Length: 248
Image (cartoon, rainbow, N blue to C red; front, side):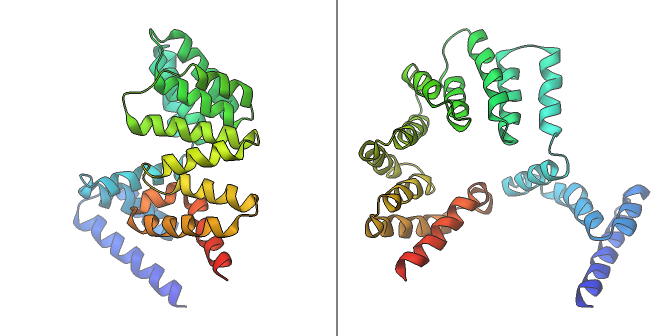
């Protein structure tokens, strides 16, 4: 009963806002007939744009747009590619495919982009290596990383090292992977390196060594904004849950 009352109040508030601000009649119909989903859409696309200068609001709109229309970015990227077959447009299609977890299809786009780019670029090579890794083509990922030009950005080089550590881990080279995770974790924001290092230590039966790493992740996550946490929500949930279990 309380939820129904709350739903009605939200609809009324959105309808009043719509009428007072001269919004179009279709929005009023959406609010009335779609109830809460309609109100959410109205708030996202009519109310929040008033605060579009705020970074988190922009990111919220982008996330919502993807949820309502997950193929939008891919359609847009493919349309641009049809207009101009450039390396940049190939990368955009590949990135949209990656967002949908279609790593094997993304490889094709990144390979063409790499072949058509005038010079070797870190951004293309790294994307290709990561897509190969995620699709299980580990040997191909290693060969791409071996020829990857260094970036002028320390953070990008750290991302390269993190991927290299994951390849060492997959190959059973635990000591090399742990050393890289430890080194990269001192510089990279967030807690991905610590989570991967802790998970590897736990798999090796070294539970006590994983404890301080997971505790560090817990501290770091509190400093992240909502969207940065959401990007790795499953990983951070695992870290919190595992830390609680290890502490007993």
